[in-house]
Length: 159
Image (cartoon, rainbow, N blue to C red; front, side, top):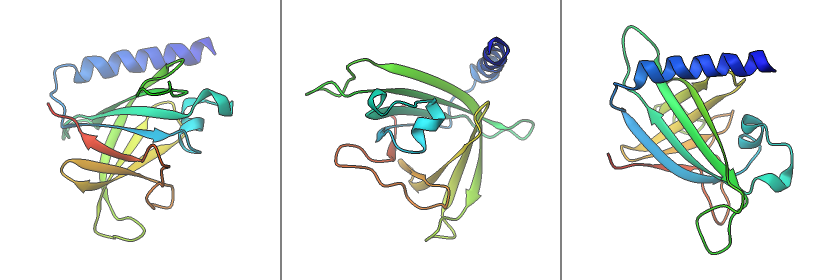
């Protein structure tokens, strides 16, 4: 386990040193329920640990000499009543890279961002809804369905 943590620390340091001088291509933020994709990604086993998550997804510009970097930051926990915060907030941060693909189940020409996170056995797919919004897709490239309080649509943050 210690070697595993050292590996992620090294990857994180390398990631930060590679992108700290780069201006982000885009930063998307949003909140979503803790669903079947989110819990395994964060290693959450107990249903009571996570009610919803807040995301910050930073995409760095595409570079012809290296994969395009991505940084994903999650904050999650049980919602604090009458606020947008958490009772006992936890967080996780991932580095990785992203590529542009085409096609969803219903729109073959749609622009899709595939986010590959280092050290995680899962890719995340986001369909570009507009220049200001993306939406998380499931493994069959369908739109993820949220609940009454949170969706899987993320808005572009202002620079």
